Image (tube, rainbow, N blue to C red):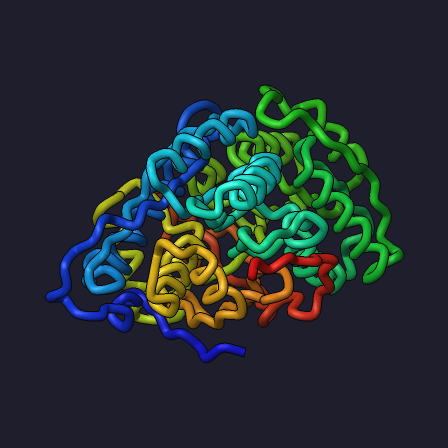
Length: 415
C-alpha cells in the first residue's frame, strides 16, 4: 500500500516543486454535467465546487509541477448520454486530458465506454475519467476499466450503510422503495432488497417501483400509495428536482417516518424542505461539516461561502478529487502521461480535511472511505445549506464502509 498523502485545505503546499520554474499551459479539467434544464442547479453548484477547489487547493498555492495551474471548464451535457459523448469529444479536441462527471450513472456508463474506446485508438491523447458521484456499482465491477476512478461510494456500499441503520430500528416493519427509472435507480432497489433480506428478513417491502427520470410534475399518486401502504420507512435514490418533488409530496400527504436518501441536501433542496423535513429526511454520504472535523475544513467552507454566498459545499468528494489528482500528478511528475497519473492514483491513500482517509482500491479504482448517515435539521448546524438555517448533521458513522465488499472487476492495465 502506498504511503498516506496528507492534503488538507492547503493540500498543494506539499506539491509545489519551485515557484521560480517557468509556468506551463494549464492542466485542463472538463466538467461534463447538466448546466441547463431541470437539474441545472445541481450541475452548476457542482461546477462551482470544482472551480473553487482547483483555485483554493492548487492554484493559490503555486500550482503543481513547478507552477502549472488547474483550469476547470464547464460542458453542458443536458443530462443526456448522447450529448455527453459530443461534449467529451469537444473537450478532447481542446486538449483536455481529465474528465469529471457525476450526475447520472447512465451518462457515466456512456462516458466510461467512450473513454476506454478512445484511449485504445488514440494512445497519444489518452484521457482519465474521474467520476465524483455516479454510483452504479457496475462501473467498478463488470464495466470497470483502467481509465475510470470513482471517488464516491457506489450504490451498494451506500445501501449497506443505510440498511445498517434500518436494521437497528426495531420499529421499522414495512419499507417502501421508489426511484428513478434508469440504471442507478434499479441498482438502489436491487441493493435494498438484498441487504434488507439479509439483515432484517422480518421487514416487508410493501412497495418497489420506478418512475420516469426528470418528467414527473406531480408525485401525489406515488405519495398516496406510500402512505396507504402503512410504510415505516422510505428508501429512494432520487436526486435533483425528482428528490425534492418526491420528498415534499410524501410529507405533504401525511407521512412522518424516515426517508432514507442518497441526494437530499444542498442545491436548494435543504431550504425547500425546511422545517417539514426536520427529523424525516436522512441521507448517506461522505465527509462531515457539522461539526467540521478539522480547522482546515472550516476555513475551506468559509472561503467557499465568501465567494459563493448562495452555494454549498455539499459534495466534499469534489475537493478530494482535486486533491488526489494533484497528488497523483506530482507523484507521476507529469500531467500529460495519464497512464503514469493513473498508476499514481491507483492504491493511493489520502487524508481528507473532512474527516478520515480515502483509499483508492487498486483492483477496481473504487474509493473506500468513511460513510455517515445524516439527518436534516436546524440543530447543531455550523454550516447550513442554501442560505437557510437548516443543514445536515451526522447521526451514525461507518468507518471505511464496505472495505471488504467484493468486486467482479477484471481490469486490463496498459503496459
